Image: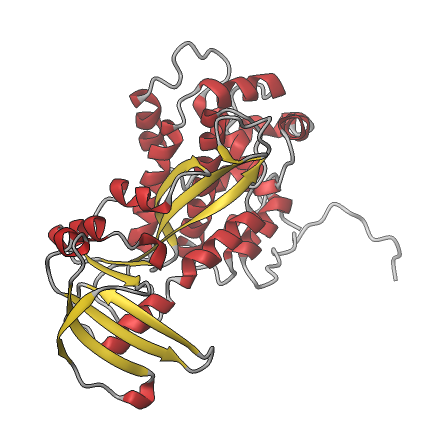
Length: 391
């Protein structure tokens, strides 16, 4: 049988990473300044290996890579990976190198998934915003206080619903309120931002309106407003009301002086009533309700990355080490999404990660490794093995 003589799977996977853009991110923050043997690329490869193979600790990473020493050069490593060297790199090298490089991959992935459907026929981009909390030990992470005897970090994430690509992530300590993420959010004119009621801050929401962006947020109880007009709808579809309102409270009216649209919807399946507030007056009310239902995708994204990536436990205890690990984990997630799209792989992202965890150092074509079909290579017409029995 013929043997594939090309690159190992890890090297083929890393070929999807733009080398020039990575070097530009490293140069921007002087990541390789005075680095003699262990470069930023070696650090990225080692941490990506840890994410792809579910390594438990820095010693686990170094031990596994040392057993594959003869293959590391062909995988792209140029420096020797040890526990102390990797720990120092995670501690000292600027995490913004990997945050900027993740944004390069995110822009590429969003172009690939630009025509992906997410269940609602919408010409504009739709984002879901939410946060998740990762519990930590207070004695090891004193810079991330959360409760009296517990620490935590929060991942504030803006998810592009076309392809479920995270396009904005902000890492903060556990006490940070979700509303603060709105102050750092890049706003895109014409895009829809879908949020839960925890993000109801009318001064911040008015910034969306001034930027030409649309928001869909779940309304809170006890909102003081005055109805201007209402629209007729099909009551049998679950739509209870569709109104144009203005806020009447002394503070809310000052913070959001423009009209709002208030939609009441009853979900018969869960027997629950929802009230949505939005600054979009053109889309049908049921489309607004379906858009809010898509917000659940960001919850599924948090569940997926906690199950398949190494972000619930960290290899280092400093803020720089934590942010470095999170951004490299995001880069691995986006890289797998890019490979899945460009190679037209029919498997899910979870299945791809499971396959890669066992085949990173095999010499097989990447598309054959991820294919659902059992690909058999042609047999050698002139085998060297002589027949055992001659009939």
